[in-house]
Image (tube, rainbow, N blue to C red; front, side, top):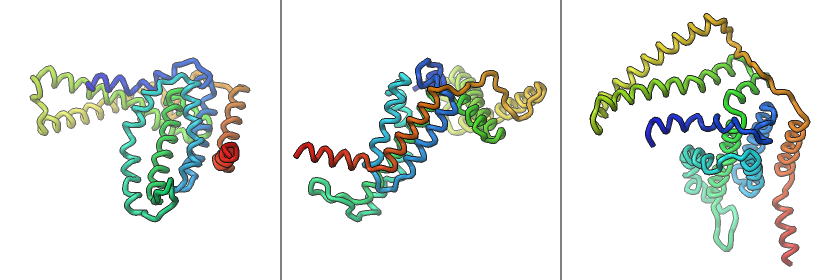
Length: 269
């Protein structure tokens, strides 16, 4: 993937937030609270719990469907960071060999259960975060956090970090294009040249940051990000949050999957 293509692909999550579906129209605060509750419910399971996590897949699947989000794009984003989750639990089957259960006559070590549990928790939490940004936008999430009582300094730092990530990438793109115009083929890719490019990028970003900060001060910046439009709570927001709470409570505190399995066994008999 070319650098220009990778640059424009970064902001696609925010562009998806311009949609006009039921999920997009929900109050950002409601979506943030729902995502936080979902993540807390998922990570609260024990490290050997696998079956209890399966029903929580309904939450991201429902939001992707209702929000009309591109599934393949989200899957690619998840796979991009999946190696970190794999690295965390890849040694569990080797270090934890105690037999946890026998599946179809084959003993299954507890390490495999904890490894699968880590992967499921990773899939659920990352998908919830991606869907939240894709239906709300990162600035929308930050504004919701501020209205929920998060410190202004923390929210401002998050907004600046996200906003000036693109400024940094723009500076990088200018340097990369200049190098491409002055070189042929793979010339100019030596470590010495790369070090000079990184050093030049650092100096440019520091100077750019100083100019931006002085411009902000001259315009009366006091540390609080002004918001022109505030979303108000609606009945649909309350119903959505209530449905999420009931859904999470049902699958977290009651053995729904166990009851379902017993019901299926009874029907098959």
